Image (cartoon, rainbow, N blue to C red; front, side):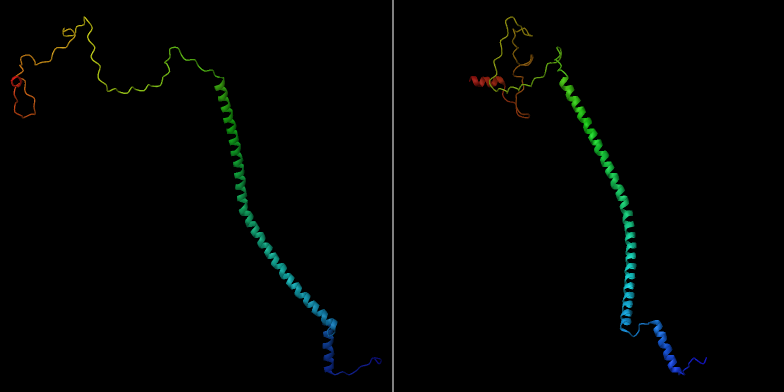
Length: 203
């Protein structure tokens, strides 16, 4: 106890020493140039880390959106791909069917041509109808004079027994020439008889 030395310090100085000690505990380099640089570097590092964290957060959100969009696009493209594959299969089947039909038609045509070449021509039937000939053109009508009538052969008698001649046309029996009605328009006065006309001519 005797060796220890005690000094009487005022309360004001004691509080100042205590504050300085607490400050050194918190930042031992405070007040020096290196301490200030170190503190500035730490502050910049904190800011950079905060910015980096924000960038990472934004990138994560963008990736989530891209994954969602990719899923939606995949869902929409899936049925389209299925339909395209179905169309491709149908086109292949149609093409195979067309090729098969073309081969069948080709074979049938070859068989028909071979049969037509190997089959002999049939001879014409003896009692069959003659082949039709082309129709002859009709002779143009002639407007020349009519030929004279042929004379009746000797010994030929006509139906009336007059040697082939026809009986003369005349007035019917029981009617004289004067009794024939005159020719003229209806309602016209009767003209002179045939005898009157002949007698007038003889004068």
